[in-house]
Each structure stands twice: as C-alpha cells, then as structure tokens.
Amino acid sequence: MPDQSHVGRRYSAPGQRIASEAARAMARAIAGDDPVRDGDAVPPTFAAVYCLGPTLAQLFADPEVGIDLAGLIHGEQSFEWPAAVHPGDVIDATAEITGIDTKRGMTFVRLAMEAIRPADQAVVCRATSLMIVRAPA
Amino acid sequence: MTAPTASEVAIGDSVTPFSRTVTQEQINAYADASGDHNPIHVDPDFARSVGLPGTIAHGLLEMGILAEAVAAWAGGNANLLSLSCRFSKPLLPGDTIICTGTVVSVDDAGTATLEVVASSDRGDRVLTNGRATVRLSR
Image (cartoon, rainbow over all chains, first blue to last red):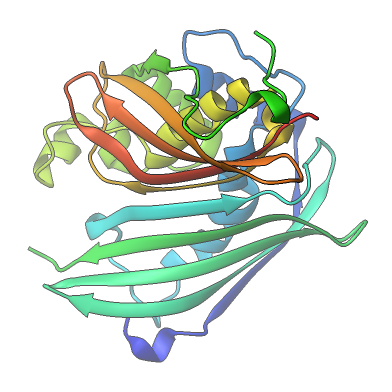
C-alpha cells in the first residue's frame, strides 16, 4: 500500500509524440454521436494520453508503491494548458507524488504532472491528480 | 454561435448549456482512444463484481465533454486555459451529461474564471467543484 515514504517519487515519460490520428480518435470519442466541433485541434484532455497515461502507468506498475488497481478511484483532476499542443509535437512528461494520506481505510495519493515540449521549452500542460485507493474488501 | 468578447461578458453570465448522451459504444471508443481499458468501464460483469451498478464512464471522458462545453462557449479549444473538477458520482451508459457554468470573474487581460458543474439526467452531480479559466477575445 502507498505510504508517506513514497512522497517525492518521480516518474518520467520522455518523447511522447502527438499523433494526429490518436488526437482525432479522442476528439471523436468525446463527441460520441455528435460531430467533432474543433476537428483540427488536439482536444485539451488529450493530456490524458501524453501526460497522465505514460506517467501513471509507471506509478501503477511501481512495486515499491503497490497500488491495487481493483480498488482505485480517480477522485479529482486539474489541468492547465499554458501553450497549445499540435500534431507532430514531441512532449516530455513527468509526474511526482506530492502527498499521501490515509483516512477511513482509504489512501489518498496526490500527484503533480508537467508536460514540456523540448523543441521550444514550452510547458504545454500542468496537471494534478487525486487517486483514491480503497482498502481490499 | 459567436464567442462573446471580454467586454460582453459579465459576472453571473451563464455558459451555453451543453448536453450529450453517453453510450457504451462511446465509452468503449474512449477506452481505446485513452488507453484506459480498466474493466469497470467496459466489462459489466466485472463492474458489478466490485459493487457498481454496471459499467461507468471514465471520469476523464466526462471531463472531456465539460472541456468541450466550456471551449465551445469561449470560441475554441485554444481559449480553454485551465479546467479542474472532482469526480463525485459515476455516469452510467445511457445517461445524459448536462454541463453548465457561470462566470465568477473577468480580469483586465480578458481572462474569465467560471464555476462549472456537470449533472446527469438522473439528477446526480457527477462533476463538482469545477473551475475553468478561458481567454476571451478583446
């Protein structure tokens, strides 16, 4: 189970390429049966793919932290987009565990992520996530 | 629809309400697009085995729809500067998500801050504590 000793652990996912087809697939998934509104743009929450996905995958696979995926809930999420992302961009994503608290049998894991485009050193996304791990039933 | 300019937006203004019915097909498509194939989203038997009424939508799919709602009002994805929320209640396949927002401040640079919320047509507040900032044209 995650505990205080894991605060400060960092995960790094460099070289995330923004593929236009993957961005379009997410825009279509968000639109459902409706037409895609902003077809040329990368959807803002595509950060799930270039920033959260590759760093959280490392956290979830970290045997030292030992998160039980069966009891995992995404509790809160914030995104800031200081600069736009475009297809073809290559992004370096990092995440850090910023806090871990346990109450009422649940463990609250807070993370901060940052995504940078090395080509111009632009920060394209800052994010925070709260993941809640329920104790095994 | 034309996006409002900074001088046209006042505290208390509402974002154009935005609803969308989320189907299991859409949830499956989001699982593929995001790479999040957690079985609580795509496998009804597994979802029930962990105490859910059935599969539930990804929180980030709901947040993507909320982002679209705010961006549409603000004139496009590029004008959405930030978005945050709490995933309070699950959204189930077949539910309609209804996104609303209210302007709480506008600064001299033309950045508006909004309180945003998403509810389901069954009356649950699915995304709460929502905040968004958008860039308005001058």
